[in-house]
Image (cartoon, rainbow, N blue to C red):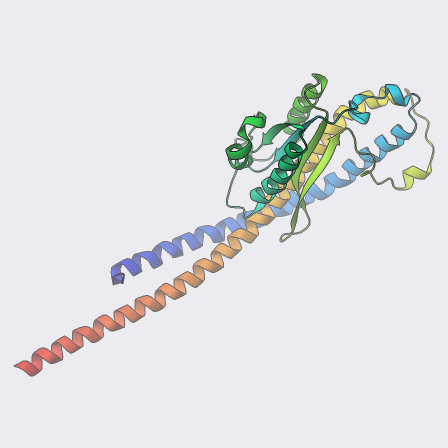
Length: 292
């Protein structure tokens, strides 16, 4: 049984940890508000771009010579999987949920006899993937030094994807990220961005109208499709940022509660041990007095 001094030190240590987790929860709550606003503001822009691409796709004059980013290479032999995770931990199951979904897809691709290539964005995702699928990783990105990820970082990742596609390194590209719903719920997503998945694009009111484009549709798509790759990556970054803070807030709240429960438990043990020690001393004193 631990001594009174050991219990005292343990209680002090747990209380210090509790203060840290409580502070981290408050910081995450403050960051979450801004991250959630950014994610919600980015969604309409992303959906609008998808809608425009869908409309342009329906108006293409020569489908056979359409941009490869839109229609693909005609094969599905090689898959590029882009796994977007965080560079920091202490955020519950945020990183592991994305990696879990990614690994299920990796396994399925390899079982079908297809080739697999992986790009990791975020050091935590790389740590979980490299043990089993390290040999398939072709590029690693980490933005630890950035306080907040901006469009320039998304463009960097987008350009790398397009460069690999132009070099005929893959046929299909899938990105993995967490879709933010609320503080408690973040849903891991696997989204195909190359070729553009027109089936998943929900056209709204624009779909019922006919548009005339200048310059022609093919020329607009040549410029718009590379931008769309970076836009979809940036959307995933924004969703991830909100999901990370929401997951961290929940995890730190649970940690604070658990620390409180542990302090209560240790305090009870400390009081019992202290009472037992006092009782033992009294018995020794009384026994000594009786023997005289």
